[in-house]
Amino acid sequence: MNIGFASLTTLERLGDHAFRGPPAPDKGDALYGGHLLAQCVVAAAATVDGGRPAHSLHAYFLRPGDSDARVEIGIERVRDGRSFSARQAIAVQHGKERFRMIASFQAAEESPPYSGVRMPQAPPPDAVRFTYDDFTLAETGASFWHGMDRPMDIRYVNPPARGEASSAPQLMWMRIREPLPADAILHQAGIAYLSDSTLADNAMLPHGLRWPDSDFAGTSLDHAMWFHHPAKADAWLLFEQTVVVTGQGRGLVEGKFFDQAGKLVASCVQEALMRWAG
Image (cartoon, rainbow, N blue to C red; front, side, top):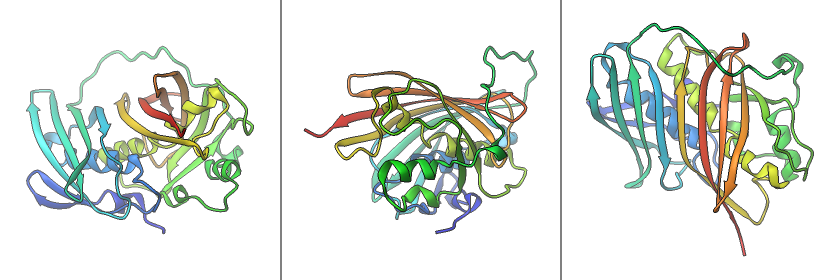
């Protein structure tokens, strides 16, 4: 199913603080978490006056979502200050809460720039031909997986060999597949959409295991994100992903987005459930 990202984030307004989003294009066992992140960013921003972009979000995946169902989103105005606006978004399907997010939006301000991290060395995106779809199909032995219908391109710079344990940061070039209009919120929603892809999967790599393993049942638990500088979601961004810690049935992975000029434009962390059958 070929549905563009702009269509996925075009929400029906049901009231001042209520929205309905279209279903996902990928029909997997559960709704892709980036779908909820993106739609809730757009819904929350629609209730913020003054064109304030988001600077952070903190979210919990509370129940598996239904990829065939539309998403009902309610927004609570938590606070409006001189510089910051905070909103809570609650996403519901079939009468049950699936996802909850608090996002903060900031009026434009200036301060001295500094970054203590550097973009890792990587070949340019045009020189990388191996996609995340290629990686997933090789791992599963299948000819198709539902994530192939998501409106994004992912090129895997340094995929580990099958069954190999790896603690090296995973590097991927990512972008939203279609050109997007010049809307800062839409591009932030696009980066949030991208940020949920592959992040939790990497928690398995230090153990030489893979997310699709038949005896493994995992899911994203929570997600936090910070937007440092304006960036285009439809331009190639390098996503550096590092496993921080695993244990107690969970794994924590952090991610950093760099634009092609080497600027750190966004950061995120996600914790995933790690559970084996038997």
